[in-house]
Picture 1 (cartoon, one colour):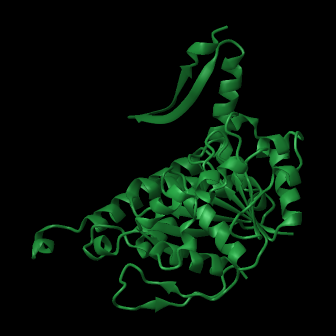
Picture 2 (cartoon, rainbow over the protein chains, first blue to last red):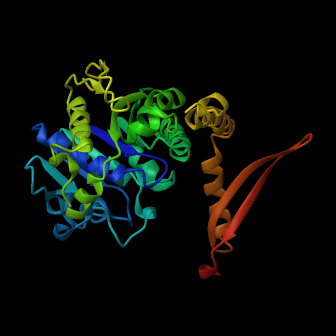
Picture 3 (tube, rainbow over the protein chains, first blue to last red):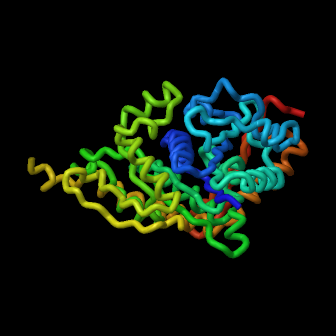
Length: 270
Length: 80
């Protein structure tokens, strides 16, 4: 059975979909079979970031309603055979989701893939709840900025309340990605550093991603930034994907890039 | 250059403010874990009679009195 990972944020616009695309592709580049699913019904975007928007025929609502099979709806990535994609519906709204349908879909995907990555909608409405309900692990994406962090805390609260794993007396694992870090601002004391954010949210760190103009350039072209091996953000996502795949990769201190301090992080996903 | 002597760094102000705001958010969630269900049920009841867009519930405290204020936004497009 594959691992189900929900990528969540609370607030929109923090780079959640970009994170999902890069994590999915990064896992696939580690030779693991991975499917990324866009759960943002009505606001389909992951297809654009992955450069697959012209290949969408069936969406996940049609799969859940039995109008198409998973096989028919799955789109294969152009850059890695291991990465598959399931698009959100653009025409319907979030109210079409139900627990039973989501459960059946997620279980179907778990049989086929080692990693099932769900890109959740922003906010904490029903669409979000359905995305986290059957997840084993949640990856929370924040920007080092007060509104993003506060909304993330609310999303984590709902995750803890609504997760099926929690209801079954187990624990849903939670990891944080701090996205769009400006080292210069952190050093001047004008931006929260990752350790402070971890303290406030009481959550484990999965990775730090620097602010990188290349991300917009990458999404313009539909080529996730992880493919640009020289980019700062691409390198950060490659490290994150490696950690998810169970490799010991130290957290790089991008907030103080010149001091060369590395922190040890041992196989959190093992 | 010596600005830090008389000006507190904004990142540390952010940390203090967030810590307090989040503690209060968590208290509210802990006190009313049923809030979402309550909202949905109110929505269902009102929907029987008139179209509803959103239901907001807030806790208000004035002196000795604690109250829940319920704000229901109607959906103009679905009058029955």
